[in-house]
Image (spheres, rainbow, N blue to C red):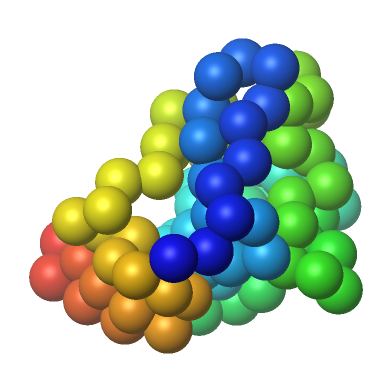
Length: 93
């Protein structure tokens, strides 16, 4: 399994995954995306290494801060996380 990282707020994440920054829609403002983002759209705060540039920052949207790594959602690798999160997004629309 990939390395997990922890921010100063104790939220844990798979380093370099970024699935939660791509698959779901986010309706709250994000720095650089004042209208939020559509499902499947890469967040502007996701860097080239698929790391959130706002991780651990108070500027990070609340919905993002509340999302923690969960093996049932994130699976064993990034592709699994993208597939599950995309399915959840489509199922809840």
